[in-house]
Image (cartoon, rainbow, N blue to C red; front, side):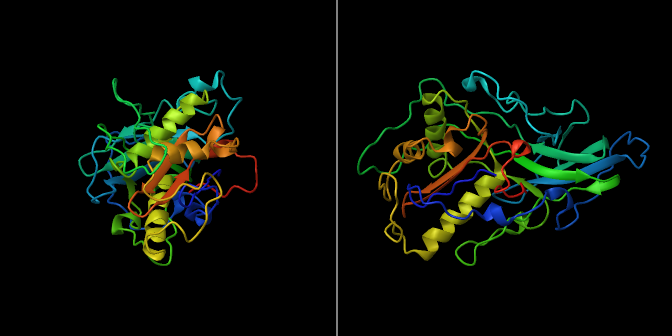
Length: 320
């Protein structure tokens, strides 16, 4: 997985929590969600699976209704489409969603995917769309001694992209529990329960970074990105850990990029990530993104992988 985590805004790479996460959510631990009783459940053979799970709000743990859930084959991506700016999560050269089965969560946040052929899949829960600013909205620009960005006037929800293996029969899918840092961040109970969860980007701390990322991608002739849940949780934990353990300063580690320090707008911080042809930012298929900047203490993290089904480099860890 091509993940770069940045301390402040420099190019010093930190070890990502996700690198230690290992295998997929399809066989992970956690609390078993209540059994869903789908209507018209097909007669199972050893080669088919009825897969169920639960999706909750990452800010409260409350069940989320109306969330779209689908499966994509876990197979290598084809050649990158051209031009690069035309790439979308639905058109990135990678396998597309199965036309059936697809599901929508009920009032209890439960989903059921019935009669799926056994195999390895990418589970996608959420809209998985590229969000762009509304007409008339422009990116706040700043070059020196910048303050906190203006909160964005629109919202974006992350999407779950999970590695699952279906083995037959009735199978409950469990979301992975991401490894936690020793101190400074405590995951809420629903992030360790086995339920899937979806987060909304924070208007001040995260949305300006996402908007700046989209602008920079466009400036380089690249497509925009959807927001990935696991990357977002990973970045949030890292930023909270750094802020709690380094006294709210950015001088503990000297950044090697432009030397940006705390209080800088995400506009300049994101621009710094594209300096020098950083492969992880200019990769045409970097279609998933997460970014967090703690403007009070000056700690920033950014993560942006290509589709994990197309990885060929053994240095990349398994996608969770």
